[in-house]
Image (tube, rainbow, N blue to C red; front, side, top):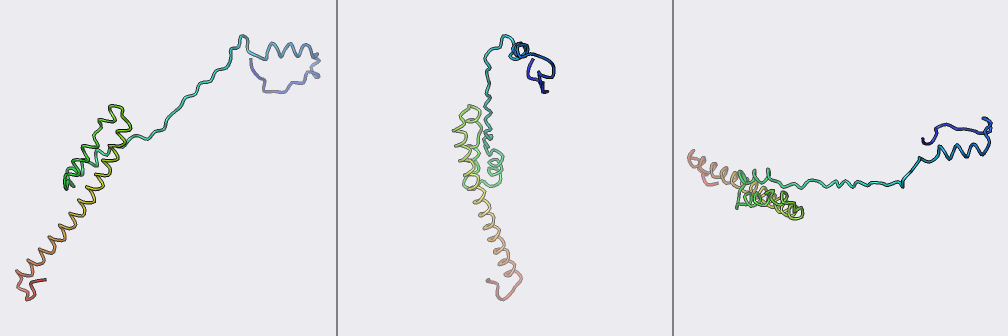
Length: 137
């Protein structure tokens, strides 16, 4: 009992205006209709909070200069997220990310410096052992 999808001309069917109004009244509105209510569902598309645990674990095991990897691992624990403190979890995640970046940059820099020192030392030792006259580089 709703709207028709076709066009109806009452003059072609021989229907008087009174019958047409009566038909519209009977077929128009649903019987016993209640006021229409609407339901709105809000879907929040929050991105999940990244806690950087894997990165912190990597830095703890391999790039732990000045214990920055371990401190980052402590900050990237999931306690705040499990409790439901999303503001605290975001703050801890930001701190863990900053500490992980510092640990990674410091670790790579120290590794490059150690490789340079080792290479220079090895070349000096090689020249001294081989008996070159200019053993001091």
